[in-house]
Length: 397
Ligand code: PLP
Image: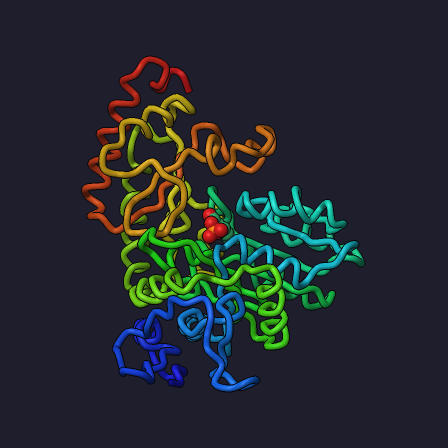
């Protein structure tokens, strides 16, 4: 089905979907199988082994491609499997890669613990400053890999400006679009070559699976990604693909609610006397609000804030939450709250954390779809209990 003329909600539910040819079931079937029978020697129905391809995984790829606006997409077992496969597909020993200084910790680890040993150098740069990107380019630079908004401070990189710099030097630009998805940010319209998603987050949206996706308009690159995926064994599993296909259908509707809830909570936090500052791209106080409004179709579902009582107040607030869950990850229906300096960013040198704006008192919220007033009531009681503790009040900031 061509989806060119449809609106986003229709594409999310119908885009790229083929009817099951066997029994016309409304949901595409789950082909939970490792292998497929050949009709005759050398004759099959397009499938032979699920490490290479699987009809349910193909169905997910077509649905994601419809949303991305690309001819195809490639699905992986996790977001990290997607990023790893991309790097093994594009990079050779001696290559240099520029990455946002705020990329996901697993991407940093991939470069430091694996690719560096193979002679591939990753350089972490403040990509929100295009001059720093220009200055970091070397003759060996093969790829610019940006994540925007960055985690957890939501620092924004101007995709269009960086894509112009990359294009002038014939360097590929990849955007990790996990935080916003193609519904809230369109990397290809802004000049990117590759869009990466951890489908674990908003695409699935139900905290039920882990998965990853890569989309590009370059069909040769997609084919090469499939070859390397087959070689590394990083393809998505059929059941995860099937679950993700169901979650994907409500993505545009969920994101509207995530954005509305996050704005409501960000505004409430900003007005709370115990709160030092709030990072949310939808707030007028956010330093890059204008760029966010121009580049994004919504401010997203992630909010970060610091209490005046610093690290101890953050610890106490997290420990006193009753409704929200203390958990890593993001993008699901349940509100998850993390303390980046002791979890997602614990591996980073403390001075680098400070330089990136990740203070020991910073709290990140992945705002779920519970009623925002219930979430606010939970934060209200948790902050009140926290600042009543010795060592967590304002005097100790
Ligand atoms: N990219 C971003 C922005 C992420 O937040 C994550 C995980 O948190 C990943 C990639 C890795 O995805 P996965 O956990 O599915 O491997």
